[in-house]
Figure 1 (spheres, rainbow, N blue to C red):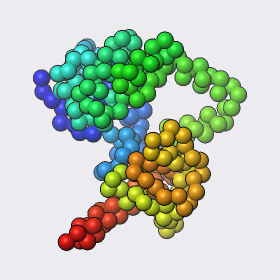
Figure 2: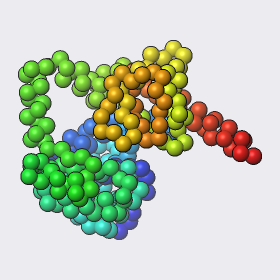
Figure 3: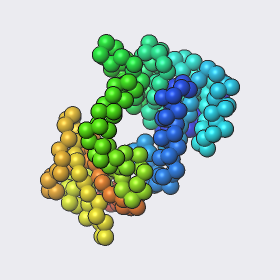
Length: 265
């Protein structure tokens, strides 16, 4: 079985309504941020590959989507996942209609790639949610549960829902949210929000910070608080500002690395 050449990509398991929604969203994000600098930690703009047993459905689906690649086979099979590039993938969506199959895919994916992010579909979170997490899922999403929450929110806080949709789904090209992780060689490491956010003519706002090892977010973090390894900060700004900020961090990361090498000589 021929292996995919994709790296740092996403794997979608199964063709159904849920996975088609995932593909639609990824295609949208691919179109928005396809030219972002290489090396960002976001899943935005990443390539993806779909795994399913039915080649005819895969072929029909590929006719619709520009960035569609696929592997024919059982997504719970080691060799099929390896053909989809599981060992070098960024994330995987076990999105089949069957809970047990998704749990087994989750377990297999975690075994083959301990670093991969797994977001699984689960139809019954009350009785089976813990089994997904025990198998290695980072998150479990129930379409029924999310649908119910969305219906209530649309009724009681419709304008908040519209606002969040514009931020998260890029409907408003002038405004978006993005998360950035502080890595070992990141320019942001050891800096404060004030230091990394002080770009000329840039109104980018750091609106939240999650410290490494914490499950809670600090909203409107202190501008003088130092960023540590594996911290995650959330920024708000227009798409141009976000791209400029990513490029700024990457460019200065390179300069910082070169300065360290010079200092060690």
